[in-house]
Length: 470
Ligand code: 5AD
Ligand code: SF4
Image (cartoon, rainbow, N blue to C red):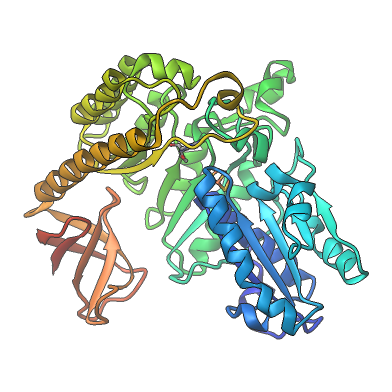
């Protein structure tokens, strides 16, 4: 059995005496990638530091999904200028999707930046740092058809010691017209299931009680001994017959232990199968929660987004979720003001929200990303103030639905996995139900990693409040 990287867990001083500071933006996948980066640097003898001012190397793992996310990163970069003044040998690196999107342009535009590294090139970071120490700027933005970092034991950077992320696929082949990810993360590839199960088992053995399997589109996970999904047809017969689908992978991870909760993200309406839903229903430790981005309620807009489903198909998937897993929590992503969206079409988004009543939603204004299909083909013609007003209507409606969803939980009892102290008081703990709702309750003698039954007695807009029942 594989045990997680012991070196990484034991706090020994790094062999080369240098310290790195690592800051992460964007999605869970990026946070998971940062754990891989930390592992690569630790192996080379670097120590991690929580203080940017103490670091020999500052790394920012960036996101490119919307313009405002990139602007925030550039703003943050300027804050490091003072450190570089004090310590001219300080190395500053930009990693991740913004690095991949801008490539050498980033070196030209931001004089502070020494290193630019794309999501498939993290193994080269130590060499790139050396190049910079030799007096040059360094860049590696090569995308790979094979890299999954499957052999790397991530250094766990999240603090609770209870829940962890495990990447199962990299890249994305969906080609939604608004999205930069296929360009920044490359072709979709799946990771060897044995390494995934081993990682889950290793985490369980050291006390973790929840893993979230991550991919841009988890439903398209497919392992047949390596290779891209699009080449599956060309695989040998024995490879095909022993292929592992996402439903199968979910089952393998769920079997690690009934005490290990399994979550996953993100599902896609056009790919989510009933087989996955039946696997969820079969294993109680697979959490009753699906994140299913809808993006828009208008079939015409969905077509223009190249989403691969229409309004009816989306509703049909929601119905399947609720039939096969009654009470399942559902969350979504919504974009307001996509190119050419009319008022009528925006209203269709609101009406689809009304039909589903999401428990949670991530809501965004459309942000044109250079190089995407939408940027090339469609005018970004919904004025900013209209995008904002539509977004506000979406947010307000969602608040109403989320509030009603929380109200329905009052009086119910849920099994909660304790994750830590509540933000407000160490006399209270918080954890989540299988349905992914946060619940706060008096501590008694419980600790992170314990399972407790909590009866909900009231709620705020975002949190349930309860009491342990025995
Ligand atoms: N503008 C606004 N939102 C976007 N998303 C992705 N690309 C864009 C964009 N160009 C949103 C989608 C996606 C989530 C991760 O981010 O809703 O599901
Ligand atoms: Fe994650 Fe997408 Fe942002 Fe890249 S661009 S960090 S994949 S959200």
